[in-house]
Length: 575
Ligand code: AMP
Image (cartoon, rainbow, N blue to C red):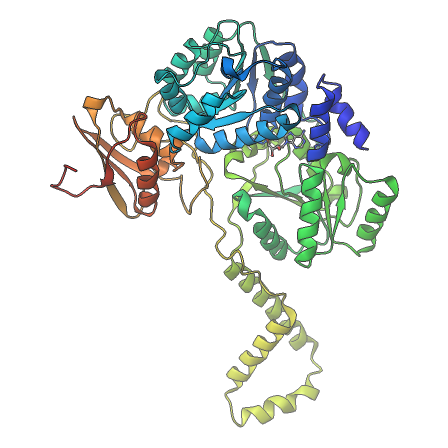
């Protein structure tokens, strides 16, 4: 089936080397946003696309961009493409994706963001790169220092444009775009399309193709009867979370979805190593292999089927009780297809989704399409699993008591009762049953962090952050931390930090918020009051991130300038 997989991408006009790379990465077919965007982008059209994280938008703009880079163009002319992104994390992710897709074409890419030393970035820029992926603040700093020349740029991509505006980067974007050639190709992706984004598109894009994946109208009864739950889990903890959820739910048989072939193979191997009877199913397998797998599942010799969307299409296994989205699907419609594998013939099925913090918006889109609520739950803790195992032991004991026929065991209790309290004897017996029956609770990942979904955008400030008060109402940007992201301003202990630059140096609240959230990767919910004096600034942050913020600000500085940053001590302002 691998021929079929590459056929989907080749049909969009992508060149053989790129198609080959995608096959190697285990991509089976283009996502809807890729199908709609790649052909017009290859033609050189400007494009406005509404797409959330998880839809495959990065490949949607990166693949055409790579293919259109002029062959043989000298790097000395400056970068040919610039991708602007809101955060340091995204800059690294996108740069990595561009690098991965562009490797066979020999394309070089450089991420530039605050917090990293200028010198290193300068060295690479001097040597010459094809693609720069940057946060707006740092890109502008380089432009102002004349260390970045955008004069020969062919393509500009504004990725997550709504986030960039929310972070107060509007002016920076204008300044950067003004430094690029008029005849460049411009691509704008945004999860939401508020009027401010439309206005930017109107000003800077020429006759753009508008891609908004039309919401399919679902026919009556298309959404099966399923209990839907989602867990917000950082990528690094997904495997542990899956184990916990499986142990808690005890599915009869579950279908677990991953995005790519490679991920299916990897997860199958890991789950088998953890003692789950799992089988892989993907488009790279022969019909014979597929049939063997299906047989194992039907007969109960396997309990987990780990599959890609393509391979699971039309699958009909009556034993399936759970569908688990290990990766969120690439479009809300695929979610409905996936969960259609359970909840058949009036039986209640269960659909579970492990979403990464950045993919929270995607859950909203699914709720809108299905008109059903998805409960966001906490990943079961080790204590939850223990409690559940005890409940099972209790139920078995109760059954044994009701069934009677205990006479053969009574003498053991009677003899022990001469020495011990009967209550203690029973308790010890429960302990032994528990130990004998329970699979060991996985305590490796005892600290799966609880990731709060990013705050909703309703009621957010427009434009720049407010005037010096707990300003940064923005979503989770970095690896989430326990309980972060809900309350306005930091909860718990507060640290006050001194920054040795103030109004006199042109520091505005948004520079402080931008440096902390974007460059240091701290959630906006952990920033409190910001006071800007003439020659210094004091900002409040949550105590548990204070050292991280200090370290990052010392590295990145404010507005590209190194400044003194330290804990603020009342009455001691100077250095
Ligand atoms: P993005 O929405 O760009 O953040 O991409 C989400 C994830 O989907 C990334 O991990 C990509 O590697 C993956 N991805 C992108 N396109 C495809 C595809 N056609 N098939 C499978 N996975 C994909």
